[in-house]
Image (cartoon, rainbow, N blue to C red; front, side, top):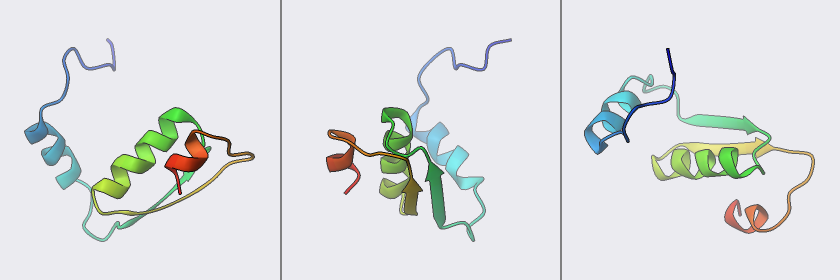
Length: 68
């Protein structure tokens, strides 16, 4: 069984998945946020209206610029 989706998620599916997050959850802290994957996830959370914080040992461009 593969955990990867067989096709891209539709906007309706994304909205349904995000609707399952309790409404009381509005802050997210990501560890290793300066990586391209976690940094992109941070951007998606921020775009969805979450307050996002993160930590990492070192932050370098281009992620340092994107995460400002």
